[in-house]
Length: 279
Image 1: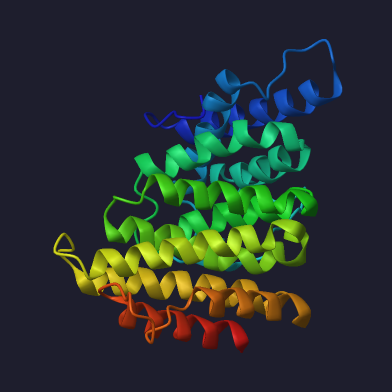
Image 2: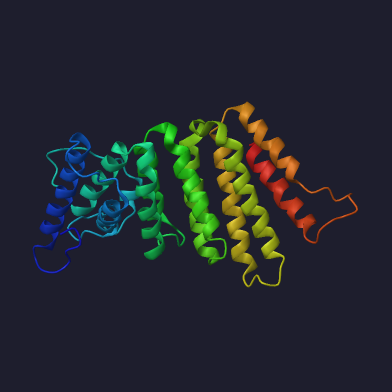
């Protein structure tokens, strides 16, 4: 029902399907006798159905061709007639709000898969940014680090993908790391180290003969640097100093006898990162 796209009543059918999903979520989390909807086989059906409607333009909405959905406030007016898009937005937020820490991976996997299949990472990744902002704002704050880590892990798996995809994922990270902020806690340096590792890998790749588009690779590096800068801006000063010291420790010393090819360029990029983090 959520994927209905033929006939005059398709819009009503999709709204009914989304309301049905919403009811299943509400009933299942409050009634132990019902099946566990957080199992992978259920999430693989529920999450794509929600995201399919969230990404679809509604011809009855005047703002369908604008980006207002992605930047506007979330409304909760019961008297307002809902479209499939606004209803799916509500469903996503409610689903994430009810997910426990142990259930997050089952939800995140189909979200990431949907972004891959529908090429939502390609810049500008407005849809992906909206979805991950909704997720971060809806889950418990202490679980925010898990979403960040899942995105970084996905970036790991996409290390050989087209630069545009990696730029999109890094841009999404840049837009949500500041929301997670201090809730990341002890995993702060681990996440920052992962971003630095990706930056070093990109610099090495750009200097190699395998790189076919150095400009796109530089854009990816800028997106990673912006993500680290945005991350630092949300932290208290003492944690920002830790990140700066960690960055300095990764800057190669050009006075050493054993200097790798490209270390001078890497030093330039890491100093640029240090400046971004410090402001």
